[in-house]
Amino acid sequence: MAEGRARTVGTAVVVRTERLTPHMVRLVLGGDGLADFGAGVYTDHYVKLLFAPEGVRYAEPWDLDRIRATHHREAWPRQRAYTVRAWDPTHRELTLDFVVHGDEGLAGPWAARVQPGETVHFLGPGGAYAPDPMAGWHLLAGDESALPAIAAAMERMPAGARVHAFIEVDGPADEQEIATPDGVAPVWLHRGDRPVGAALVEAVTSLEFPSEDVHAFVHGEAGFVKELRRHLRLDRGITRDRLSISGYWRQGETDEGWRAIKRDWNASVEAEQDLSTAAAA
Image 1 (tube, rainbow, N blue to C red):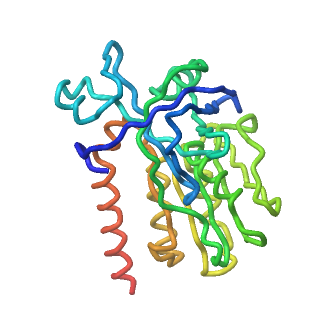
Image 2: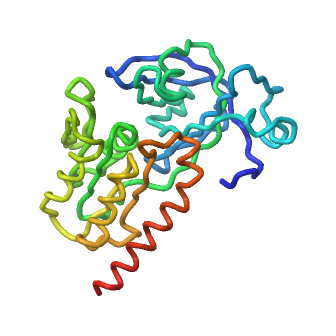
Image 3: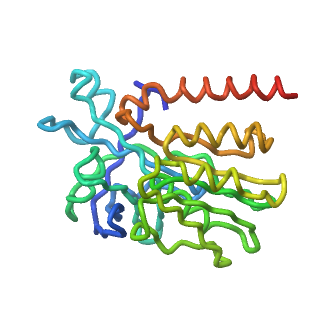
């Protein structure tokens, strides 16, 4: 959604919280504000949580056009995108999982300390990917930031689906119980002291692909995503329409800084690889 475009701000209430692993916290949101919420078409559905800067208050209900017209840019809400881990329309409960590394960042520390009853403001949902039931096999790869979307995709796989899933986390304590309906579990890659994504690049580039008919989902830190995008597009010949791939975050960049350059960065990477594909043809 374009900057400045009118968007309706949704509201929800924190119902309960749970520490899943040392570096992941789960929030379950509910309330009447979710009466018109809808998700389920995609496994990478996401919402953009809105956080008012410290000391800033907005009139209820939040109206982004009004806020931007009456406040300086530095007082606008900050946005953080999070995958919908689960949506239960019967009980009207929305589940979101947050990566937490101490006091680092904005949403992670907030999720670690938020209490039931607190109000949450958000935009969405958005989304674009779901496993193609007709694909010959599925490749899923990502770091902690992509774990909720990979987990949702695995649980949505059709019976008999062939799946190779790789998830990189800090260590064994960060693993979770995830499987397809047929019981296929992901391969957990422990980062240790290696750079983010190094284990994922190694795992995917060394994988013997079962066939060319693959539907792939690769998300996480932008550096390794760029490496795998090049490998999958150029070395493996996967066409763009069979590949959902994006950098959720970029090491060394704030979330605001990354969002400001992400579109142009992705476009330049695609253009570079299109030229390489044409040259190799």
